[in-house]
Image (cartoon, rainbow, N blue to C red; front, side, top):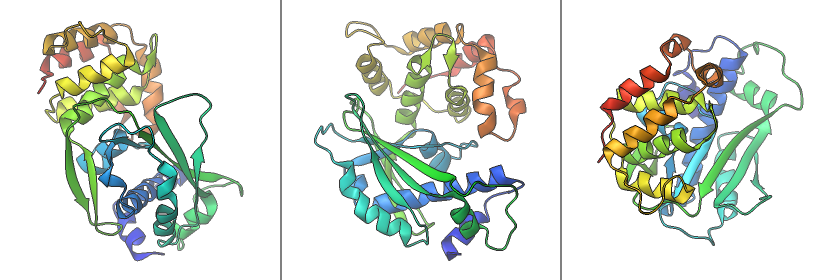
Length: 288
């Protein structure tokens, strides 16, 4: 086993096959980040979303995808240009992977790709001294999805952070207020009627627990781009609270809990979830 992977595995408490797979995926995510950094990707792009929150701010849930945004809009951006260097870097850690761009079926500002490998082969690489804790189909695939927004909303602010493992590297990422703005936008807009991603609600609570403020100008640009508000609509701190309060009154919380439960260890934190809970904690929300 690669020494860096062995070191990273020490941070995980593994009790079953599900834990083994999650640990493997999270470490593979960080190897992809390292590879993208070495490929020069972060000269143009920034990291954001749930996985950024997990790696750099300690969010205690598994996040499936790697989300990125260009710092300035560029419709000619070519994600595939980074694949050769990224694949070479990832393979240097002993991972037998391929990278494939996802072909668009409709016009979109998002470019997507998948890094893929055989699940059983990689689990045996990560856990060579252990018996795998369950059956795995021979053709089961581990996939790391990463997406880039090539037409990002304006006014995001960024910071640079460093990681030592799997090898020292630098990442450009949204700062906490801009990350929080993206999450408030997701709570308001990434839903269908009463259905919502429980993961968005879980992250929303995390931001408030950390005392994060919302990048107001960036949130307004996101809401405008989504058509959620019109250019003449106010977007003050109180307006944002009012929009969230209305949203929280319409949510199916049983469905939201089911969505997030597979991604967290302590599901007792969800017991208080209801409209009143979210409306009350939203009184703490501040903007910057």
